[in-house]
Image (cartoon, rainbow, N blue to C red):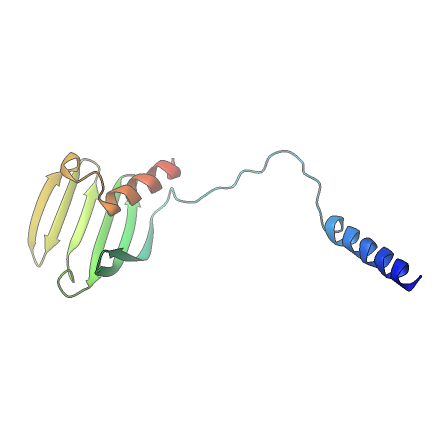
Length: 120
């Protein structure tokens, strides 16, 4: 008898746990991802034996800036993505290439494309 009462009690508590806190679904709920605004974030990139850290900023749709802080071989390098062009700069030296010349597998380009398409 004790086993029966214990199992009924556990079953009742289980039912209350499953349905006690549910809320009725009333239509669909849309969530905004808030990617369609300017933001800045720390970044860490790992590729083979290299690990790099820095800051990436979204300025607007298709406009980004990434600056590396480590390792020492990349420290101070800044990349700017502005629609059709990509510009790299280091201590006053700049180099610009069309965006189509950036390799298809470039990590930052893929990240930027993914965030911009999800922002839309």
